[in-house]
Amino acid sequence: MSTRRLLRILLGIIILLSSLVGLSVSPAAAATTRYVCKNGCSGASPCYASIQLALDHANSGDEIRVCSAGSNDTPKFYDGSKQMLYVFDDNISLVGGYNPSNWSAPGGYTVLDAESSGRHLTSKGHPFSLERFILRNGEVGGGTGAHGGSIYIEGTTATIRDCQFDNNSSAGNGGGIFFFGAGGTVKQNMFYDNSAGSIGGGIAGNNQGSGSRPILIIDNSFTNNSSSQGGGVGLYNLLFDSVVEANTFAGNTAANAGGGVALINNVEAVAQENIFSGNTGNGRDIHVSLNSSFSTQLINNVLLSGGTALHVTGNGAMNIDHNTVRNAVNGIRINTSGGTATLRNNLLTESQTGLRVVAGTVTANNNHWWNNTTDWSGSVNPTNNHYGNPQFLSAFHVGPASAAKGQCPRLGHVLVDIDGQDRPNPATCGADEQYPVDLIYLPIVIK
Image (cartoon, rainbow, N blue to C red; front, side, top):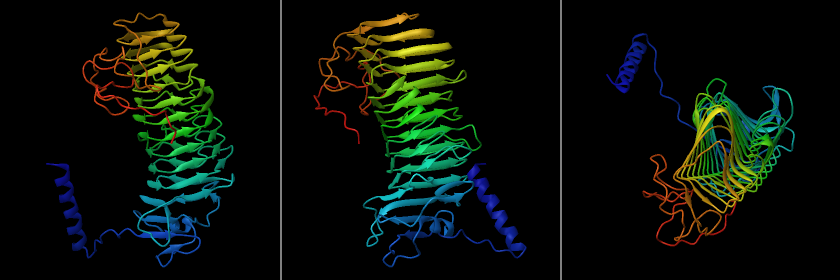
C-alpha cells in the first residue's frame, strides 16, 4: 500500500471518529497577507507600523509585505539577546521593497538598520523566508548570543534571497548569518564588510544541533568580509551534505584559514563553480580540513588570489576536479594526516609550485600544467600530464587554440563547465570548456 493512500485512509478514520464523538474538523485557516509601513499602508489591511507587530499577529503561512519606507522596528530583548525581529510561527514569508501605492509587486528594498545594538532577526524552530531587505549594522557581542550578527537560525530551515548584508558583526560565528542545527538556502544575496570573531565573516554554519539540514549557498557575492576562519563562508561540523555553488568571493580575509571559504570537518561538502580573487589567509581562496569518515568535492572553481590558493589538512578523502588555479605561490597545498586527495582534469598555471604535497596520499591524473616554476613537489607522481599554453582570453576562459582543449577525459560527475556549458568527451582541462564558436568574455565584475 502506498504511503499516500495510507495517509488518506488514516485521515478518513480521524474525520469519521471526530464526527462520531460530536467533534468538528475545521479546515486550516487561509493564509493572510499583512502589510507594514511606518507611514501607513494606503488602505491595505491589516496594516502595522512595525514588522514585529505583524509577526506577533501572524499565523502559520502568512506573508508580511513591508514598504520601502521601512518600519518602526528597533532592537529589543527577546530570548536573552537584543534583536529587531523574532519569528514565532512557521512558514512566515517576509518580503520588503513595496510601494504602498502598489502592494502587488516589490520594486525596491527595505532597509533594516540595527545601529550596532543587536541583530536583525532570530528564528528558533520556525521556518521562514526573507526577500528584498538591506540588513546593516547588526552587532552581537560575547556570551551565549555571540553568533549571527544579522540573522540567527536554530533548529529549522530558512530561505534568504535577494538581500544585502552590510557591516554586520559577531564576536563568535557568522557575521552575517549563523545556522545552528539548521539549514536552508541562501541565494542571490550580497555580503559586504561583515565580520566574525571566529568562523564565517559572511555566513557560518554548524549543524551539530538538533534539526540539522543541508545548507545551500548559491549565486551570492562576498566582498571584504573577515573572520578568523572562512572570511566569506565558514561551514564546520556539518552533518548533512552542503553546497557552496556559483558564488564570487573577492577581497575577503581570514586571520588564520580560508580567506574565501573554510570547510572544516564536514560531511560531504561540495564547493563548485565559484570564482575567487583577491582573498587573503592560509588557503587564500579555500581551506579544507577533512573529516575522517567522509569526502569533500571541489569542482569547476577558479582560484586567482595567489599565495596558497587551496590548503588541505585533516584526515579524510577529497576530490579536486576541473578547477583552474593561476598565479599562486602554491596552487594546491596538501598536508593531511592520513588523508587522501584525488586531482583530475585541473588547469594549474603560472605559479611557483602548481601542486605541493607535504603529507598525505595524493593521486593526480590528467592535469594540465603551464608556466609554473615547479609543476609539483613532494610525495606525488602525477600521470597522464598535459602541457602547453592554455590561451587565456580572460581570467579563466580559454581560447580556441588552447593546449588544454580536448585533453582530459570527461568525468561522469562533471558534465558541464563553470558557465553551464556541456562538456564533450574528451573535455578541456580546467573550469572552462572551450567551444568552436568564439565568445567575447568580459572582465569579472562583482555584482
